[in-house]
Image 1 (cartoon, rainbow, N blue to C red):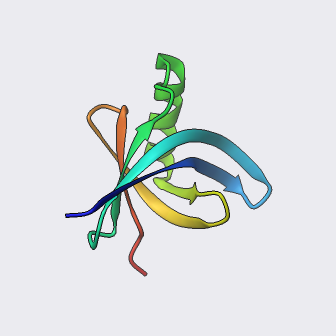
Image 2 (cartoon, rainbow, N blue to C red):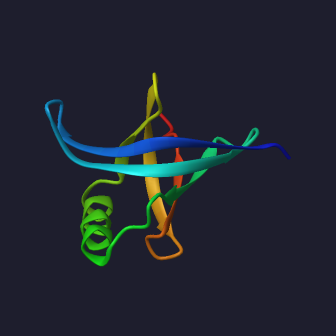
Length: 91
């Protein structure tokens, strides 16, 4: 399987004008799966980790922003909140 790693930002928007979180991440994808594994880069401190968990619990939809593109993803925490699994939501 081919794996690709890129840097990106994970953003949580309260509305079209207010971004409440913008977190730098490294995302790894495996060809053909439609999922990404997100690693926080740099690692999150305890306060930010707790805030992120609250955002995921409130609404698990984020914007995954690369340099020139963005896609809406659904975040699922695994491995505590050190890693996230990101998937494109089904319509």
